[in-house]
Image (cartoon, rainbow, N blue to C red; front, side, top):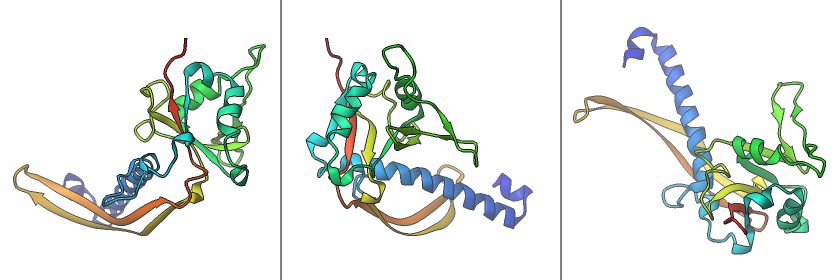
Length: 208
């Protein structure tokens, strides 16, 4: 309400649209992974069609060796899905556990690559694109509990979204809290069309 008093209506509407779009994108990411399937998309991590053999546990020691990535993950991907998948993880997991992989002489196996057009870092691992997400969307490996997901391997087009991409907006005054309530609504549904190329990376217990 204070903002509406000091700016023009056009500027206010533009700012509200920006905030709604930002909130929508953040929620969009959350429901694709964690959606319950009731009144919202069915999230990948809650899809019971993803088989137990597609949930791969890595201990910290296993994560530190590139051979384990080959044996446990890449060797498990069916031939029909090879070369099509991406990896999803947090920036902390990427920096702490991927960029620190080294050979027997402690030389790093991976180098950061910068996009000359944007100046952004292009994250790639074993030739695959790595999409970084915030830790409120997916747990960092270091903070994940045993059995909890910290990464994904999937073909993005295997997840389908049904939406009109239009956000309705309404505003009302809550007399109980003496505050204005701003609410955005969007028609949105979605789920995996094909679960066979999806691998959920979880944190394994420590091994002796």
